[in-house]
Amino acid sequence: MNPLTLVIGGTGKTGRRLVQRLTAQERPVRIGSRSGGVPFDWEDPATWGPAFEGVDAAYISYYPDLAAPGAPAAIGALAETAMKAGARRLVLLSGRGEEEARAGERALAASGADWTVLRCSWFNQNFSEDYLLDSVLAGHVYLPAGEVEEPFLDADDIADAAAAVLTQDGHIGQVYELTGPRLLTFADAVAAIAAATGRTIGYTRVPVEDFSASLTSEGVPGDVVGLLTYLFTSVLDGRNAHVCDGVQRVLGRPARDFADYARNTAATGVWG
Image 1 (cartoon, one colour):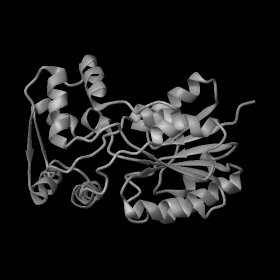
Image 2 (image 1 turned 90 degrees about the vertical axis):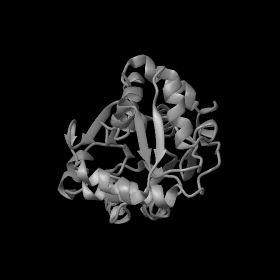
Image 3 (image 1 turned 135 degrees about the vertical axis):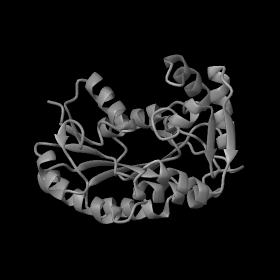
Image 4 (image 1 turned 45 degrees about the horizontal axis):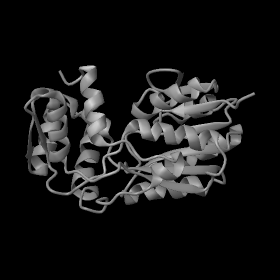
């Protein structure tokens, strides 16, 4: 029989895609989240043990991000819970260029689990399934990001990679840096969306203070505001302005291009 896999964050951008792939392979899946499947809450460790009952492997997506305070300790504690329950195969979704996330990766490695890390760049789907969607729909994106380039990564590539490392041999103890195939600025990305939709969508760089204040006024939780501010002021400083071959190494094919993502997403009508 195929082993049971727990997908933590199984209703999120990467988790739900991974669930679809494992289900298509007729592999038993348990979704762990606050909004679906079995109850799982990072802020309530009492939910962790029951979620791991009978589980052999797990995909770990930490909310809101591995760069958040307390994340390394939580990852270490979760890995210990998993191991006690008999789940040795653990795959961690991590952030590329986030020094704080490295501590979470180290906590996982120190647990003694059969671990793999997927260290990812900025998701394409942040423009269509997250906080940037409203800006795209409004016709103008305001962000504190200038000419620094980012190798935007498709969530479908992350899910494909996660499915592969969870179900195939040869990935234990590996750190894969997953990126898209080329570098773009945020202005380039918005222009590609505009071209795909046939709409006029502008882009303006704003001071980070104005960006944070705008998020706060819109009711975005303080921890998320702090995280986004950190990402735009620290991680997007050029440290990630290079392409890696993680997708090719795991999947044996190139990563999806942002222009393809923009065209395919525009066809769904989500951008109006």
